[in-house]
Image (tube, each protein chain N blue to C red):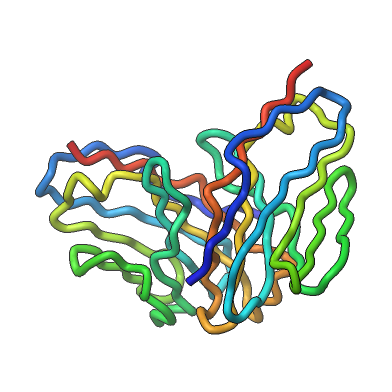
Length: 111
Length: 116
């Protein structure tokens, strides 16, 4: 099993940058995923990290440090539509393809 | 490409009744997963199909839950008899083989089950 911790809530201003952290403990790391979920909708895949470093995809970037059990999701040039829940999920080598999720971070973007 | 479709979107049933949830994965996706989110908790894995075979059902809570994927296309998850603690949002996800992670898993919008 593993613990996946992320902040419950964050607030940021439109146009700003926000970093959402995720820490995890696992016995056999096999990838970390970030998902965005708007209320009542499907979680939407944002990023996947399996090696250390930064993956950039437009306004969104995700960073991974396997030695520290740490990842962050960086959102730049925030827009109102970025208000959503952001889910960190880890896959373990010995649990097949199952994802283990954190509780999610609810991000509110204000004008 | 059509996404992952789940039916119904909402279901309210009485304790002791039976409910069947359906998931239609993306066409050609051999991997199909069921997850559940109970209020206030994280999304939790229930089980994983590869085509019609159950690859991993370690997350199924108890024997009141039965999942099938006949023919390796759509899947059903039956809860019989339903209990109050079964209330939550049931998500289905699919992914192609081989699973590299790069494309992620595509989730459906979920079925919100309320047991009263």
